[in-house]
View 1: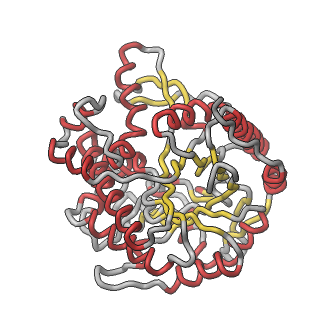
View 2 (view 1 turned 135 degrees about the vertical axis):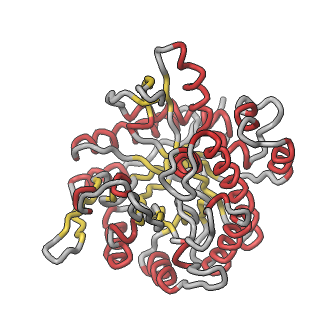
Length: 412
């Protein structure tokens, strides 16, 4: 990926939370969407959609089912077919929320950073002829939120104290992962993906909390790139929850860099927030236009000066609403490039229907949690197979792909 080219991509939802407990069902998207069985036809859909780049993840808990045992069989056949047969370029998600069950306490296990780096090195050593682009860990802020603040995913911590504990562990793991990837495959490139958002409030009493919340979208990126110092605006927050000067020095001394900033942005990523009865901040359900994407990409580029790829976007609406969101966000990318901001790719995510995360907490049958965000929509046939069917959005996306992107404007 470079400034003179543009990458159109899609992705297959790959949240891996295999651990269940009373009241919380396993949330393993490849299992629930039957991708383990339907992977060949799913790759055909990628080609049919017109794209040749796919965000796709490896289920760590399956390839390393025990600390000293590896099972690459399924991933071997998928990646070989994806790259060598179908001509699809993967952007490989190494971590998409879940850790193996044998790693007690998941992200806050003392050995997690070393274990995840070991896994990343093994992946690079095995697939370096097939894979060039890696995402060390998808959406650190969401990971820390669901694992550390909301107690919904392992290790089930809660509150700001849990959030910071998970965030620091995740950040250490990313640092060691990048170092391991560079040692195993020096020519690889990183696409580090984060959820971006922009919230505001009309309530002056909430303003400090809203500003802190907006800053947290950058926290992990700032940690791993060594930007957290004595003047960092969230330093007091971090220190109140266990961050030490030794931690600061470690991140500064071990700082890594990335090649591309992957930006995930959805209609629910933007809007006004108010305080709920429980004291939590919640976003008001106000319609959001795709042009709002520019309001998160501009400050992100100003902050890091890295090429940006839109690595996830879609809308939870009827197909006409999805088409409108696609039109507006693609137009926004065009505008940003004309402004001189190097947005180098656009990903409609996911390719086909995923399972709503509410399934984990729910009790209803799986069919009630089909979340239609994609170009293809899925439904169960009479045999229980989750069939994917093309929608008019496929042709709509193809028309965008066929229209050249403007070059990135050069500074005068």
